[in-house]
Image (cartoon, rainbow, N blue to C red; front, side, top):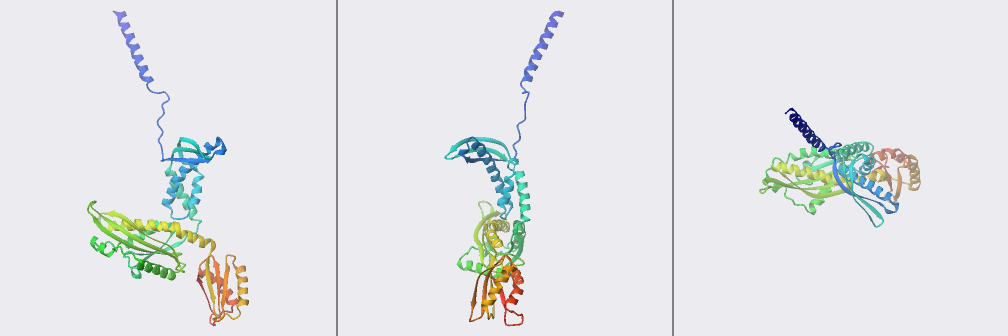
Length: 404
């Protein structure tokens, strides 16, 4: 009996050991957890010149990774900045390409014409991109001259009535922040109206007469605004049209926004457009506020990025033309030679393009290009004009400097 009992115990131990061994072998010895994929997935192609041989595909892959990073960073640059810093920021981000892309997977590679193409799928760390773009924008914005803008908005759309206009000054860097704050003040006048009143009051009636009125208003305000306060004047005519949408159970605001932008002191129109923006809200004022806010920021940002900053950059780099008119000039030839010589020695940024003389009225006119305001030019030229033309404050001679 004892021997049989021993045999049974040994058999049971052997079977238990076998089962335990089999269960242990089910767990992989080198098991690793699946890595967490961080970032935004991007599927994109990269190309390189085929004449580079096998290196072509390696370069095409690198270009694909760079394209993926630029795709994400480009969207981020556009979303957080309203200034022309794109190329500078893009260069900064591109120099750190390897730090943004992970889990690069080659989907296909092939040749086409004289190019080799590599298509990849990768994950771009958008959090890191967002942080670095913000840092780069802040860094470059400190060293780049940007225009200051005066926004003049009429919430009721009653053009030609200055008493209905509200003003706010802001730099282009502060566009979204200042516009939001300004719009909240303007929109208070909308809130006292019910939907039916708003429909009647803000009915869309854009026509050529109104366009002409808007242009006249912005030019008048631009000419009367001090250059020390602003570089451009923006006049925005805002017309919300609110209706109750019974199918959605909400109010729908279709807001027409017309904007024209003129250079301060001159009144020349440098940008303008009119668009409609639609938003929904649980009340007439909420719907109107949302559509105005979205429309103003979107349209202003577009006009600033495309037209205004290009105009400002050109004037900042090349200067603008000023007309200098001097009255009671008797010896034109002698004086104009003296003035041109003095101007060149005084400030190399000044350049006299043309000059003319009205013998009958004895008025000399110079078209001079200068990088600065008319006030700065007046200060720079005052002594020289007084000396060259014997201009006296109490005498008959006088001069004026105006942007051409």
